[in-house]
Length: 332
Image (cartoon, rainbow, N blue to C red; front, top):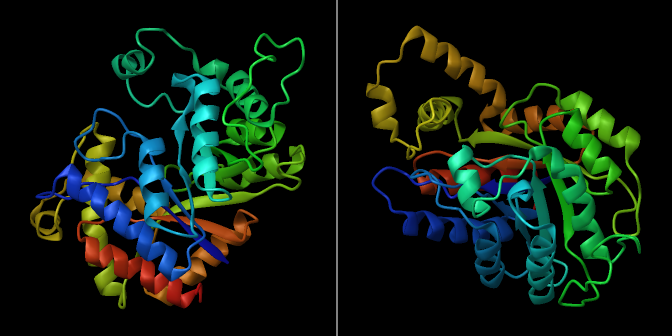
């Protein structure tokens, strides 16, 4: 099985956004040395807890700091942007780093109405436009817009021999349907909501439309993972992620708390229930335990590639978690 990484550039309490972004770059370098396939950056706005607000900029920095690993977005918030501009941004990245760029897009609005309006400079956009935007995006990239399309005469610069891989990030059969119809890869967000994953993948595989750029379907699933030498240590490390997720669910743009803070916090019965529910989004344990569960998820989602996200407090422990995974899967 292949493993990849999604990193949201989480900011641990006591750190700065600058440090979080440096950690993201360092993690990408570690990921390449460990044998991971891809390293994706996220897009989040108006938050004090996540530093990655512009995946295009961060992709360029990370690709410049690595040599082989594929680098991409997980994902660009397409409903807020011009498909033409997104296509040009990623064709430029592909021109700079041929054969290494992934363009992952999502239907997420990216925040509340105020954030959405700020992103679009006051223009109200409707999420129902996503299928049309995705179609246009592929057309701009491939130069395949039909002659009667209003933008068919436009060239998407730079004109290059290779193209970025395109992916749709989704949580349901609806997202899978869009990916299949537009000949993109499909990434299921298990780490956001594991429900309906099997159904979504089945929808994608059943209706995938092959193209020259992607002749066969390609599925990945993204999962929270915390791995350590012992089950006890993994559970302890995961406490900071548990507490951070609780805060995120309450709408707080919080930084990742320390394990000590998490241990000292008295949780209500309702919060304990939420932690237990959120653990369904994660795999926590020893290398062998994590390997067995990821292989099970790989079978469930009919894929040989799992994307991992680890949002714990201690950066060195995060690196160790990824290293242990790489070792047990024999990535190198």
